[in-house]
Length: 442
Image 1 (cartoon, rainbow, N blue to C red):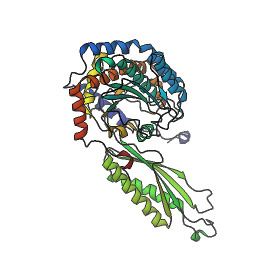
Image 2 (tube, rainbow, N blue to C red):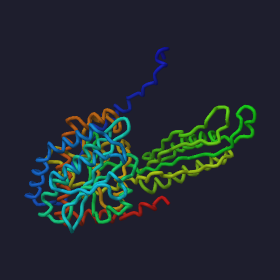
Image 3 (cartoon, rainbow, N blue to C red):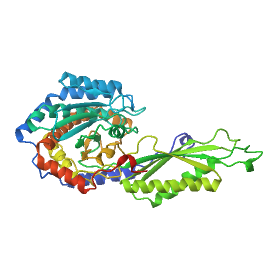
């Protein structure tokens, strides 16, 4: 290494990323398209939905650009939710803001009885990088889908709602709203997420967080170190214990953490230290098992250093993984064909290229879909400045237009086709039915 190179971190080698991208490209070329055994809504209704959605193109892109230019973080999306409500009002729909205990939530509904499907909007941004997860696109597509589906609601019956869910980025807004009863009479939920590929079903991991707070005994680190019990040693032992655990975890599991407190001064044995971990897993059961193993590591680290440990689990609601609904996802895939997209099945794009979302919590309460829509190059990762740029670029605008059509058609298909509804709910029941989400980890 050259002397002047020591001022910079060693750049990661991208050979694995390049080989992964090449393998994914081959898998995408060979993938079989997803179909649907159900007809959905009548042809004339579907045509009316497409026309209605296309008539909103300019307004939806403008909404997406507005949110992109004025990013607001979790629980502070006041300008964003007002922009959605204003657009709804211009089209004759009243929206209720600030329900379920969240000031930036929103609900608007067309119809009064019968089957009820909700299109979900997210609009929170990330600190420092704005809409690097593309929630401006999520919001605009959901709003457009609701407006287009509402235009034919009286022809298909049932109810369609737009539900604005704040704070997906770590805040768990959907779970807060669900516990307040706002989804109690909703039968199914649909939304989409921007990504690098069009995918009908892509796994998202469940996620819990825990802060291990270790308590020791302070002492002068030079004069009387033998009178101390080092909380930082306990935190370091816990961090190393988690590192040793990783080789024994399933390939889908993830654990990553930081030191949130390491003591005050080097010459004082730290009486307090803390490590914050995120735990992710592909199934509720394996996430619960992972949490138990982390619990054991924390108490072991405390015991070996003579300290105590306080485990602060899930300051905000935990996220469950997404439960797929193939019947509903099949309609989404079919409904993207008219706009020139062919959503991929599972397993084509590597499934470890993923994160977590509070939509998972709803998917264990009712049938749900969370398809991905392409807005960027395959090598661009979510939560980066590059993805934020893509979310406001022409490819993001196309996703807004195409996604609104697909979500609107899927909502109307669900309301119009009793056979589809039966298949959607039979699949949900066969997968285990509704889970008692608030008590699952207790």
